[in-house]
Image 1 (cartoon, rainbow over the protein chains, first blue to last red):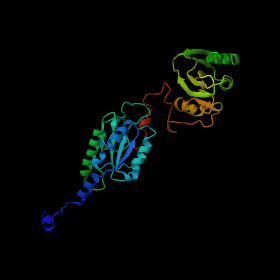
Image 2 (cartoon, each protein chain N blue to C red):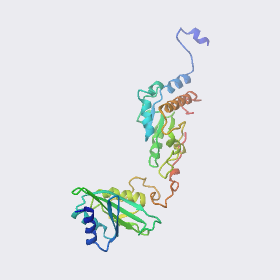
Image 3 (cartoon, rainbow over the protein chains, first blue to last red):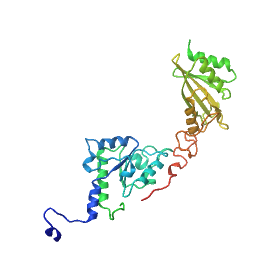
Image 4 (tube, each protein chain N blue to C red):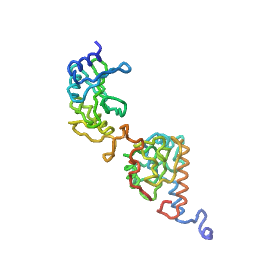
Length: 160
Length: 164
């Protein structure tokens, strides 16, 4: 654009939306809802070998009010679903949700009276990860897919 | 002397009309009793053998298995003095599945009986706080009964939907 030739060297022009989206997607703060063995894989993903910090998501927040990415990692029992919903409602917009593993996505092998058959029955989910449990690469891939969603947001303040 | 034999002898001698039978599995014996005088039986076992510890309190649903009654409440006793176990099974009819509480004999019976109530719907008369212990208070039904469907009565879909 012509503006850059008028500005001094080292300056770029872009839209405010794009800057905010770019910074937002590289600073996702996950809310780890770790309730089962998937949480172990999530911890491995966060620690040094797989190092989720490379994607800007290392700031795990155990307060939903400070986070914008829900990672449901594990099976959700009947008694846990209202808790999960309450935490989801406490997260400020915009927010995204990863359903990690077979149990969170569809109940997995636990087709019993006590278990929710997929959290997407009762709350929005953006990215599903298959596996029982998924490897850390799977979670990293899901985080990158969420980053794509963040970058593709049409309007600021409204989740895709 | 064989502790399990002396435990059986004690119940047999003191409560002859209460004993329905006995059995053995994997070297452990048990006695089947009626439910009417269960507190006296358990108190005698605790004080005189003595069985200081109630290791476990659970129940079994014998639906259509040809047993004396449909439900049995199982008391797994342990003697710290003699390092041995004994088991007492009390039989409860389907029409009136209730039995006197053992929580006055062993404190550990308190939560065990709450769990049995939670899962089987058996009631324990005189229990200080008989309410569900694991499932939500609003849960309909008793899921470990054999006639309870595997996937429940639709409880899994009984939540409000949250959308964006």
